Image (tube, rainbow, N blue to C red; front, top):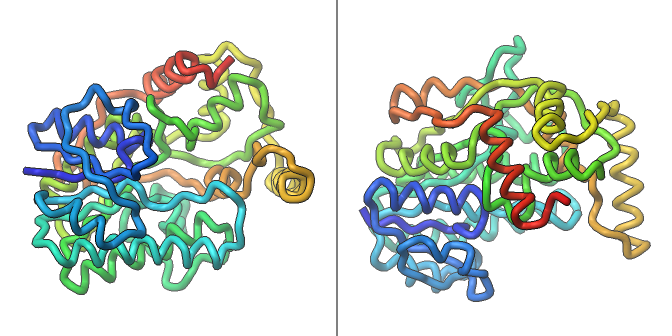
Length: 329
């Protein structure tokens, strides 16, 4: 199969591109003209230039492919109002889907997020069926945008597009240039975070996440969600593991209210005092506090998905890469 991957210069997209090649498919990387393609120079691929909001360029990029895996879904970086984040994200994805409509694609895989799923009412590990009936009460831009894009993807599938939603859990690994989820590990190792928020998480290695998305492209049923999970772990244990791997002092937990106050102060300094982006952002707080244990049985049974790396191995690989590129001092 000829598979186009969007977002291949990001962590999950990079590992997805690796999995696409490893499983014998022809890889097309769709990227912006300004993208640093030296990051993926070790991969055999065909290049196609297109921005996520450029429908015409996307149609041209998809001209000779059979399927698309979109790992370039918008992710909040600079703090803006949640309504603006949602509108921007939906508009970009609408251009993407319109471009897909013009092609007879076998599969369209959208990279979703577990944070868009409702928490299990009894505190059990959540699966793909736990949907919000209306928009989440938490008005964090990341939560709202991910929920809105999940609904959008499901509606596109109902309208006839072969859209599959692949949802890796909290992901750690190499090529996290943001860093994105690796920001927590970098903060622990560099002792630059004032604290973390307690909660429940599920952690997966980025290489396994990429494999899962590729399997979703190969075998996924349009209109279905698939959770790609590693192991469930409490934030206390995850942060302790990060400290052990990086040989750093164990970071202390911070009450959610205190973390929100710190985030607001840092945002105020960023907006009005030319300070750096907040080290504790609303998005980071939302990810840490809104997490839950997850159940990935569906992907295991229907797609044959299996993890290859433990949490410790994922954290170690991410740590070593961060050291290699200079993110961890």
